[in-house]
Every structure is written in C-alpha cells, then in structure tokens.
Length: 374
Ligand code: PLP
Image (cartoon, rainbow, N blue to C red; front, side, top):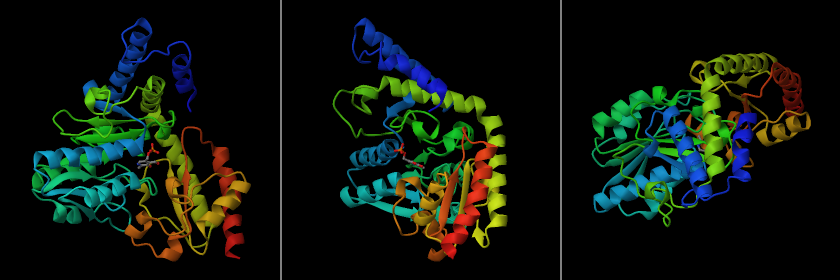
C-alpha cells in the first residue's frame, strides 16, 4: 500500500473505532470520515456523493451492478425479456455474474459481444445484440490481461441509440489507476473500482450508481449506503480507498509517462531478445502498466515459477486465474492459437516500479524462456 494510505487509515484501526451508523461522539467522528471519503471518491469519479456505494472490492461492485440492475429490471418488467450484453473479455466477476443471472432469473438472457484480434470490442457485434429488451450492457474500461482500453464513449452512444432501456456498466478496476474515468467513460450509469489496483487496501472498492439507475441490493439488512449495500461500514477501508484514488489522480500524468517508458523498454527488450515472442494488444491502446507477451512453446505456470526463483514476480495472464492450465477466455476471444496462448505472461508495472526492476527482468526472462523451450 502507498505510505499515505497506511497513514490515513491508521487512526481508524485505533482511536476512532466508532460505528459509522451510531449517534455518539465516536460514531459521529467515524461517520464524518466516511462521508469525507465518499465526497473525495465521488469528486474523482465525476459523481455525486450519493451515487457512491462503498463495496468490498471489484468483484462485489461487478456483481452488484449485474444482479442489481437485472433484479430491478425483472421487477419492473414482470420478469420478461431482460437481456444482459457483455463483451467477451470481461473479468469473470462480470461474465459469471451474467451467466449465473441467465441461469437463475426467469426471462434473463446473456449475450456476448466479441472482440477483434487485438482485444478491442467489435462495435458491429455489439450493435447486433442491442434492442429494446436489453436491460444492461457491461463493457470494461480496460482489460485486466491485455490492458486494452475499450471505446466506452462509442459504446454509450451505440447503447443509447439502439437499446434505450439499457443501463451501461463499466468495470474500471484496471483503468482507474491510469485513466481519468469520467473523461474516458462519459455518460455511463455504473462504474466499478477496486482499492487494491490503486495502492489502496485490499477488500475495498466502490460502485458508482447514477441517480435514476434502478438497482436492487445484494446485501439487505441495516439499510446502509441508501439501502443499496447493507452492513457495518469499513471506515478505515473507505478512507484508504479515497486516499489511494486521490494519490493516483495527483500523480497520473507524470506516472503514466514514466511507467509507459519503463514498460516500452521492457516490452521492446523482450521482443528483441526472445525469438518468436508475440505482443497481442496494440501498444498505443494499452494501459501504461501492462506488458502482456506470449512465448510459444512455454507453459506459463512453469515460467512463473522459474522467474519467481530469479526474483521476478509475474502473472500467467490473469492473476485471479493463475493455476488454471487452459488458455484464458480473453486469449481465446482474440483467436490466439492455444500453443501461443499457453505461454502468456503479464508483467505489471506500477508506482513502485523502477528501471532496475526492468533491467532485472530483461536479464532473466530470455534465459528462462530458452531453458523451458530446450
Ligand atoms: N475486474 C477486473 C478488471 C479485475 O482486474 C479484477 C481483479 O483483478 C476484478 C474485477 C476483481 O476485483 P477484486 O479483486 O477487487 O474483487
């Protein structure tokens, strides 16, 4: 976590331990901190404070958006004709929520819109899926494996034109560290962010729910978060999330240039040093911290272990899916041959990354790949 986040959270683990829904002095101090955090998050995401729902992270935000909107739509429309459309490369927190909703809620169907060979949503495929029956469209702002940024302004325009009853959700979990969300995804109805992608605390996040967007709660009970998410507030977590988001926004311009420079040095160096290395995404439309490469003839799990022994921590594509041997749904969606996809590695750079880290990776990766190929 960022130092300023640890520092901002510290009082709430100790002296300021009040329950934010109570009425005594300690509770009021906690409440004040919670509402200050909400104001800050709202401001940075281009929302009104009342539109911010604190969650336990990206998974909950995505689930709340998908199930919450579909339940509300089913209630409104008597359970008939609620279609949810997502891109093929969404995080499983969206994709599985959509498929589970389709399996469990009467009348709900899930339609998947494909992507091109670089991982960018195909707007013609989206158009084919849009009509009056669509209740929700979910397209991530940037992909977690490839780092590809999706054309959210065009997505919103197409949805408003062709599916007037649909709400638009964007999973900005990966993007929020690098992009100004309101500028990159103007006009969306729901936005998910997660603290641990920002140098904030794990298990924190927020879902922006625009005023007028109908959404049923997943957690009911105490009525917190304007009855959209019941449960005692994680005040320290909300303060940490807000502090991390503010730090990211302050540094974004400079850090994007610095980290993209490191990433370019890493990617170019590896493409040069490792024969037949493949870069799937178009670098100009990839987040600065993402370097995704495929090394054909290598099993990614084996490479992850070898590199770890050499002091380089990488992920075999999607961190959440590490351990799975089959090519990820993202690489299948871009049409990559399985033999190439199996050797996919995601190098993630961020605010703590240095030129020395990059040189270390450049020194050990080519040798590790050569060893495994041999
Ligand atoms: N969405 C995306 C794009 C992600 O990358 C992740 C996690 O890596 C999630 C959702 C899930 O977020 P969390 O780990 O906060 O539950």
